[in-house]
Structures are given as structure tokens and as C-alpha cells.
Image (tube, rainbow, N blue to C red):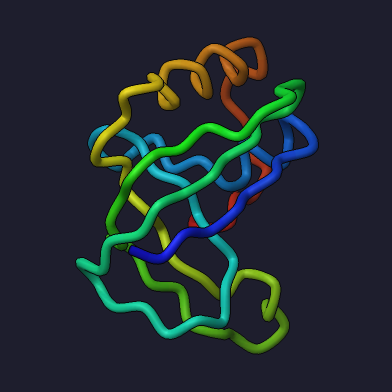
Length: 108
């Protein structure tokens, strides 16, 4: 199973990449690698303030091909499948104080 590292440096970056509308939670992973819906991969995620990475297994549920003027937003959405470390809950706790935002995200 392929693994991708995601080191999130700020809560704002996390907000842009988190996909709360996906059941179980998901993160957008910027990549040029050719993935298909259903591909499984492991994510090694370091949240803002964490000293260590958290491993979560997931599957690709969202594809974002390159778009003119948005090359930085090419990638995939990876749904958490085996979230034994409660990554989704930790993300929601970190983002809870930010409230609703109209700022653009990587997916919508």
C-alpha cells in the first residue's frame, strides 16, 4: 500500500485540506501521482503542533485533475478507513474554534 506524508503547518492549511463532508472524514492530498477512485493508501499525517506523524489508512474518493491557474490544487481526496488514532476527532477539535469560513478550500 502506498503511503503519503502530509505535514500540516497551520490550522488554516488544515482547514483548507480537511473534507468534513466525507463520512468518517478525509484529507485532500496534493499529488501528481495517477490515482483512481477506490485506490487504497496510507497517510502519515502531522497535525499543527504535533511532534509525531499519525498513520491512518484510507481510500481515494475524490479526484481533482489539474485546472488552468490552479495547478496547486491537483490531487485526491482520501477518506479515512481505519482511524484508530481518532484523527478526524483531533482535526475537528483543532478546527472547532475557527467556526464557519467562506474562505476557499482545496476541494470546494
